[in-house]
Image 1 (cartoon, rainbow, N blue to C red):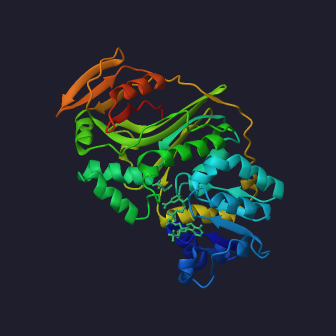
Image 2: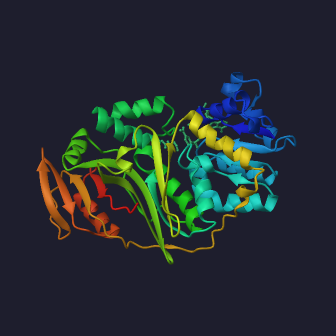
Image 3: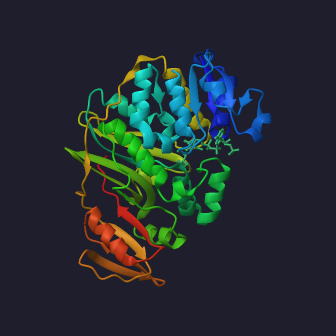
Length: 387
Ligand SMILES: NC(=O)C1=CN([C@@H]2O[C@H](COP(=O)(O)OP(=O)(O)OC[C@H]3O[C@@H](n4cnc5c(N)ncnc54)[C@H](OP(=O)(O)O)[C@@H]3O)[C@@H](O)[C@H]2O)C=CC1
Ligand SMILES: N[C@@H](CC=O)C(=O)O
């Protein structure tokens, strides 16, 4: 199979390295014949072009791997590749979350595959496992640590007492963070992954503008210490639940009992759990970000193009509307002392208030956080997961 890679950065170089240098027998039929990069990077490799038409109009190319990131021009390039009957494999969650239905339809129309395993959970075979679980069970719920950068930051702050800015910089150097790390620390990256996982698990498109998303940008060492003293470890969680015609999703820090599996996931690792009626809870663990683990998931997709199991059809026939149903306890750290019937207990620590809520739904939480009128507010949910 002849492959073109769009984008020769952290992940693109990883894909090239695995295909060109690893010796496993399944890799022997794969060959990278072109790489798209910006004109200023032309000297990096002798197969680089900066003209997308050299790739999408080249009849010898079977598969396009998109690892540039962002929505534009990735959207146009993926569309052009599919239209020209090239299989497409991508790690780009932003463009997949925004256009998954359209790309799937375009791939079906042109008799090629559109695969995006690496977009969610890095090296973990999460999308393939969701598809496989659905051969038997309905999946109504999933949750997990879906951001390697976020986990790396929280882990280094928790176990090594490091400062937020220092560890974010290190995560960038290690190639874990997005080009604009606000996607990692403000939650958009996990929102995209929740949309993609929901599409596969629930056969439905969920709207990330509807559900609550709180990031980790405002977390402090004092917060970590406060929650540690209460027996909690903070982890950054994405989750979604489908209930008949409704869905509910959250992206936010969660407080786990220190003995919970999720509390003990370190470094850039992710863990994702699905729940099926016969299989029960099933967990998947591995590196959620980084050059070679992510490239590994991409190359697995490339190899899978010719395997029948990738033919599971994605369908988006379930029309789900968002509804806040679940009740959870939350903790809000703010500089504003808020009076509200939904607050159970308030603790003051060094001019900050930790507002411990009663069990309330997402709408009530949103109202409470808005009342705080505090740009530095930090919000966490007390984790309550089965399995
Ligand atoms: N890093 C990770 O751990 C993971 C990343 N991903 C996803 O993989 C994708 C790539 O990420 P990553 O490799 O880290 O990002 P990088 O920024 O390291 O690489 C992107 C590359 O694409 C190039 N590029 C950007 N725009 C264009 C364009 N219009 N034409 C040609 N080349 C272009 C960039 O060039 P230049 O640098 O000169 O701008 C850069 O070399 C993203 O969608 C990301 O979300 C998914 C899972 C894990
Ligand atoms: N920036 C992302 C990369 C992988 O999806 C992360 O840190 O998880």
